[in-house]
Amino acid sequence: MDQIGPGERAESTADLKQYIYLLRSWAWLIVLAGALAGATAYFVSRQMKPIYEGVTRVLVSAPASITGFDPTALVTTQTMTSTYQQMLLDRPVLQRVIDQLKLQTTPEQLKKSIVVESVLDTQLLTIRVSNPDPSRAADIANAMATEFAARIGELQSQRYAASRDGLAAQVKDMEQQITTTTNQIDHTYDLSTLQQLQARLTEYRTMYSSLVTSYEQVRLAEAQTSTNVVVSEPAIPNAIPVEPKTARNTALAVVAGMLLALGAVFAIEMMDDTIKNPEEIRKRFDLPILGMIIWHATPEDQPIVLAEPRSPTAEAFRSLRTNITYAGVDGPLRRILITSATPNDGKTTVAASLAAVLSQNEKRVVLVDADLRRPQVHRRFGLQNRLGLSDLFVRPLDSTTGVVHGINPPNLAVITSGGLPPNPAELLTSKMMGKIMDWLNQDFDVIVIDTPPLLSVTDAAALA
Image (cartoon, rainbow, N blue to C red):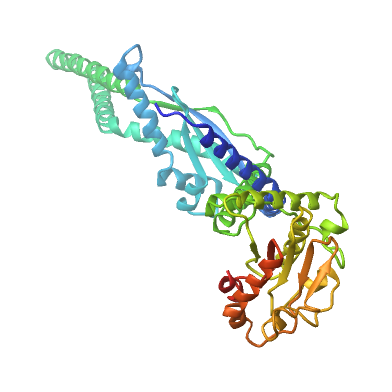
């Protein structure tokens, strides 16, 4: 079974902290998106027309022939309830409701506002009707129940109509025969004829009794096999609208807005390839971090390590000095080139302060301004830029008067850029530049070189 090592656990903790920091940084946007979405949903819901609901319940009674404890009967009852749930929305029922209430609509439109549900493990059906008028919603729900009950009764009655009507006609005809025969007996005086009529009357009465029995059996069979649909709970007008649900819509909109903003934040973070902290440098380039210098206000005429030697920023530069010293343990570093990706990143500030703290470590240090395009070193130390590095290319190296400026502390010297030449890249990559570096190494332990930004020009890469 694999185990998570300390390194993986620390990396997971760092990722979690990064996500927490990301959420804290963008919390204002997430909250704002949720608030705007919630406010929009609230005002839209308030502008919507309220919809009311009328609810009625009907009881579907099982036929007497399937009552009792019978699993088959239970299945039949459940199937019957499900069937009636579908039949409630049949067009004949809807049309009868429209005719009864004189509604200005069609069965298809009315059907869209009605929902029929079966109550689990019961023989109850719930009819829900939505309408802008609460009274109208209740009337439609009640009319649906009564008209459906009437239609079910008609459909069940039609199954026995032919037999029942035929037997009724025969019973009526037999009654007529009995009445006629009885009248004939009353007006007959012939004994032989009278006996024949009496025998016929007896036969008619037997047949009549048989027909009446058959008629009652048909009616009994119809009653035993017919379901009974009754209203168990009629609908009453409800003044509380069911739509729109302002509170629910607002809450859902707030959650949706915050989730969308959160997704956008993570998408922006995934597409953003800028470096935001030193740890990303270590992960992305697998390079050691020698020091971290926070942004600080730059004093005039001298680096911050000289103007504020006890400040946290000055201490950060001393830490950078220590780490650079350890980096050159196998061979002392004699030349340090300072550059950056883009202008105004602080490379001149770092170069000036680093040269100052290196000179405080009992090393002879010279700071060379090799930015022959936009030089800034002379401003950091309050120097004139009449003579400098560009002049060393055209004069003997043993004549450095006015080129090398001594600075306090005494171990620090500065060479400004001098006049700006038309071909700085060619000068910095020339053999003469190598001779200048070798000549400076004779008098100084460390040369700190300030160069232009890498992405703007090729001077720093060529000089390196």
